[in-house]
Image (tube, rainbow, N blue to C red; front, side, top):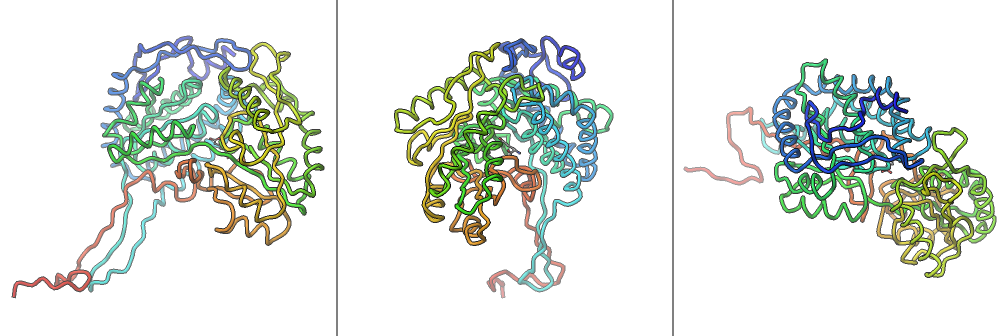
Length: 508
Ligand code: UN1
């Protein structure tokens, strides 16, 4: 492990701020422990408010230069970062596992997601299209173009400690923005490793060095600085609904833009005609994968009454064979929860399920036998009602609620009857059910799937959701537009000065 950390440039004690070079920081010391066995991985000296100011000012200076470099040249830099990530995929993927506890194949998948994002951003750097439109005035041309926005902020969560940064950073990068990244304080080492990789590429290119900046620290220090800074025009934030609301309120005071990707309460609908084997695989990965700690994790299954018992039995059997333990071991399917606090949330939710009339039919227990560390829990299945308060909230743990439905209309009604709106799916071979689910009468989520699960979205689509999920979109499609400012241009190439809407305003 020491060798791996060394290869990624992680020292015993690391500085917590970067703006083209590492700043000597002296904020609170963070001890980064692995959720696998509580072992100490390394320490990080957090950034202070003053460190943040230095980083912000460097990011703003760099913006002035970076925005003048043609977008395809900016894309070239991202291409090189993508190549470096390929080189470091194994090490970085393993560090993701060590630091936050997801199983190795998922750690590697996360780095692959970064590589895919880099490739996408490179192509995008030759596009960033604006439209031309028809002017109502003779001899006039109208069009729109997209300009870089500024030095923006990126707040990322522990569960996708590096991929979500890349969704934002690579797009913002080709758009001509510079950025300040505030990673979760539980996963600063992967952020340092990524920054070291980026630094290598910056060094060998003739570009400003403070494009991809980093400040590690608590929400109350660097987080507050970032969201209250009137000179930061956009903050993209991933995390809880509660955090998102704070970000949104702070930004609104200075008309800052927000891209919010917050909590989900994702459901899979399984209709009476569904291929249950497919549904089973998707629900298992959606609910147990990443130990239920994805914002896209499956939290509810809305099961048609005619297959309820059969599906519940199959699911129980599948849950029984999920191997839990060291996420670096390739035979393991579920690793630990990220922290003791997460285990507490899991336990609190179990108590509430029982209090509110739910029935736990599998799991519901912290696994002490998997010590060292007591952050291993049994994935849990409970029979519940959609309107239980505990079902209405997102618990970031592997707890799945089974809810009975009678028909497609009721399925959709219950499906949408939660405060969040991120990801959704239906299992059916009935075209009418599927189309209804995808229609405006159907799922109210930002992501809606047929015969695949709620988690594991590809980067090519725009990622995000509605309601308390925050409304932001990141990654693919035209999500890049939020990272740029739109300008509408009208050019008069004629010899008259006609006014729009037929207004006359002549002196004679
Ligand atoms: C998240 O949990 O914040 O769709 C992101 C997925 C992943 C991304 C999840 N590609 O599950």
